[in-house]
Image (cartoon, rainbow, N blue to C red; front, side, top):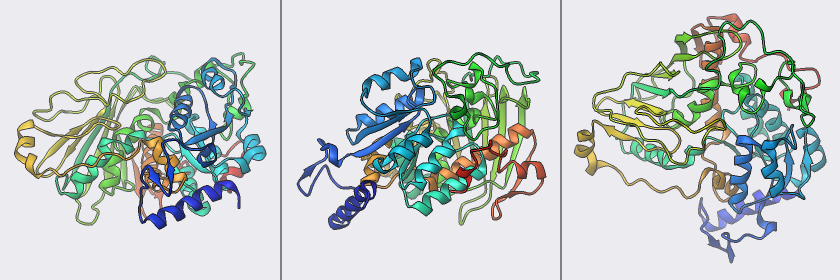
Length: 471
């Protein structure tokens, strides 16, 4: 039996003997606060600079993982040096295909902290090897890629976690408890907003072509960086976070922040997929990069006893949602990692959401930020009815690694993160085409626009990169 199978199987057996879904820190004579290397998860890391480097360090700092391989298409670039110095003797690769070919049987799990468009091929190949996967949000860039990732995870029975780290924090457990207690009920509208400056603010919306070809860094493997994406010449505005600006590579503000703002409402209100996405405001729309500001309405039908619900998404510096009476000032989660190009600006309206129920209105931030009832006098009236909210037994990185060992279940597996990511792919498609989409939730097809329906699959992958769509 290969080691990665043994780790999961033996730990699952222990959990069954103990009769627990979460094993305590000391069980069967082992103390997990100080774990022998042989009891840790052998982890490979794809993407070791910028956000990928943060993920690598966070997983390692749990004390639950051995870092056994490092992969980055620009190995030796300034932003990769910190992680390289931390693990000087660990094998290094520029191409994930070579890493899995040479070391697949020595890897239990992999982290994927690469640009949005490249999540798909790395994750698919890893899962085909039976390797567990932690992949940064959103899961992928197209609807069909997310669909294939969900099916592949189920086929190969691997542990998966999408990296919306707030899904293991206070907001997750509070929303769950308040929904189950009937505090959050009969929700008919949600506004979700991210109004900070984005990387493409300042770009010219009248741009008629992609940026011109530039001299490439000697350290960069551009072919491996492009992976399945359509052919592009190298330009510095495609790398180091700038990829998020472009439809061909990233998912804009919605894909970046939606998973930190909409995630708990999407899961615990059983939203699934929308039946309509309407872009009612797209300032600075163009075919290459994201608008300067967007307002998108996602329409969800009735679900069981829950009423139909609209989520209205706002992004852009000058495009803020209406605020209910008594809103006050929104708070931010102090654990939010700062963007690579600066700090998150704190204002009266920080990234977050407003949830409108039949009797109560709630405001909340992003990531782990908890909800509060507004106006505040309503909160005092209902205080004695609020349920006890349990504390999180593990953060998002611990949760993933413990799940690889069979000791917990991940809180944002592909079965949860996948449909949420597909909501974002539909929103981005509506942005890109500047048109309303009517979506059949049963057939998973767009019924009012043949071009949009074809784009659920996305462009044909580059020659030599087709295999990942068949795994």
